[in-house]
Amino acid sequence: AQTVTQSQPEMSVQEAETVTLSCTYDTSESDYYLFWYKQPPSRQMILVIRQEAYKQQNATENRFSVNFQKAAKSFSLKISDSQLGDAAMYFCAYRSVNTGKLIFGQGTTLQVKP
Amino acid sequence: EAGVTQSPTHLIKTRGQQATLRCSPISGHTSVYWYQQALGLGLQFLLWYDEGEERNRGNFPPRFSGRQFPNYSSELNVNALELEDSALYLCASSYVRDGLWRNTEAFFGQGTRLTVV
Image (cartoon, rainbow over all chains, first blue to last red; front, side, top):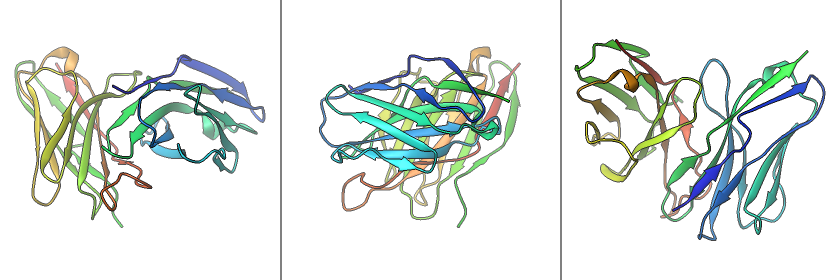
């Protein structure tokens, strides 16, 4: 069975600085997607970025980028130039391409200090 | 295009009662996932429906059940409510393309806040 682990329950970063959130996963599948979702206090889950396992190039979306290490089964999220609006709970998620199963990590609460 | 809608937004029930939560997926989406999120905690997978069938079930007791209707909307029922069932219940919808879950992210609703007193 697939598992997703986020080992950092809480992180904090100074506004305009860079922060990296960690995520590891376990799977025997070769074709899958990885996602980072953001859940602000409004509780609406928003997709931040996604990575296709068969692509070696790391995904980037504006200030958000990932470091995807397939062999190590690691998928970290880097937030550059942190803004107050980035404060939220961040979830790492795994999606099987073949079965559609979607599982989440425990989440990391990010605090952004002005 | 309307997003995933969940109703009600808030629900207050007494211990022992039954709660029914509803989810309408994005038009064209055939798959609905249910998650439980206790206050400040992560998402615990509850149930997953696709094309009207239950595809997978999380590690929850049988008093958590649900169904998916022909229009792909879904209902989550929680019987014999307990205090620890108080949580935010999130629904997400997605779809399969050409038989594969490729380029098909899941979209979430705003959730139903269930409070058991």
